[in-house]
Amino acid sequence: MFTGIVEALGEVSRIEDRPGFRKIWLRGPEWLGKYPSGGSLAINGCCTTNVCEHEFACDLMKITLEKTSLGLLDLGAKVNLERPMALGEELGGHLVQGHVDGTGNVVSIQTIGDTRLVEISIPESLRRYVILTGSIAIDGVSLTVAELRADSVVIGIIPHTWEVTVFQDYFVGRRVNIEVDMIGKYIERLLPEKFLKGELREMSGQ
Image (cartoon, rainbow, N blue to C red; front, side, top):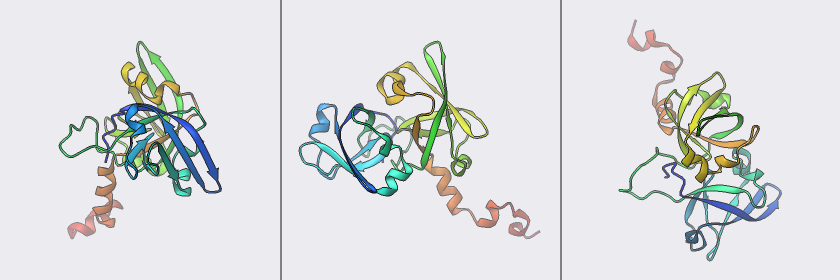
């Protein structure tokens, strides 16, 4: 479990591609080189597992390559890094699982003073889980939906967040990882199918 508060930027130092499989190595802060084998790490919001002992490397399966943007990373690409939260730590963002729901694209970037407004397209299958002023994770960063449009969201990014995350490298058309707030997904799963379809009369006995 993560919080969506990026700890540091890493950089892709090596890539090994095979059909339906990719392995990437990262370099970054000092703690990354001492990362425990088997330890979890969120890379651009995607939970991965370290498979090395004296450096960080992770294996990416076909489903991960299909559902996330990690398969598009090039050598030298910057990535957001966050270690898992521990029980009792401050929850500065929101509960983020590191299970990417899908990808969107940067539609526009508008600069207003020191702040950026970034519009990101949302896949149709995920739009029902996104609400105005609700939480959303973009490339692993916990953000608040500032504006909700028909097929996209607008998020406001303060200067600090812009400088310490991969947002600084954003451009129109860039693909980004999206994880919607898991609370909405659980509620939908638990509600009776009739309720979700709006068949309230039958449920109330009328």
